[in-house]
Image (cartoon, rainbow, N blue to C red):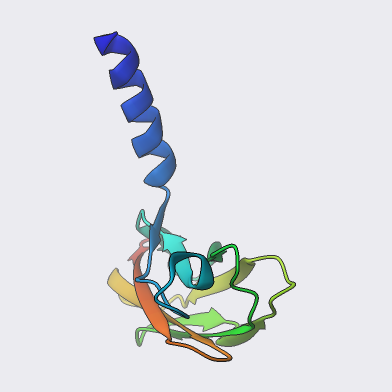
Length: 134
């Protein structure tokens, strides 16, 4: 029985450890709000390359409003798109292309994501990007 618990706990941690989420936005009611999910593990990118990451909206069952995502990277890296509207009927996943130039300094950077719904409270979250040598 103890072994089964350890296995289940490990699987839950592995699955939930893939993404980090923001505080709730939209409404204070659980099913009428949303969260923004970003990579929980630091994204590594080589100098001069482009990496694609997924940012997702986790909507409550009754949250059907459009959400505008504004994406701002730290100076030294770039991201596209920098603004996108995820409509209430759209798939919740947005693909971001993160680029580091050949001259980007090796080190840690952040990408900030802010979600603003048509009505209700905005929320935001950030994730780390590590630029490494090619």
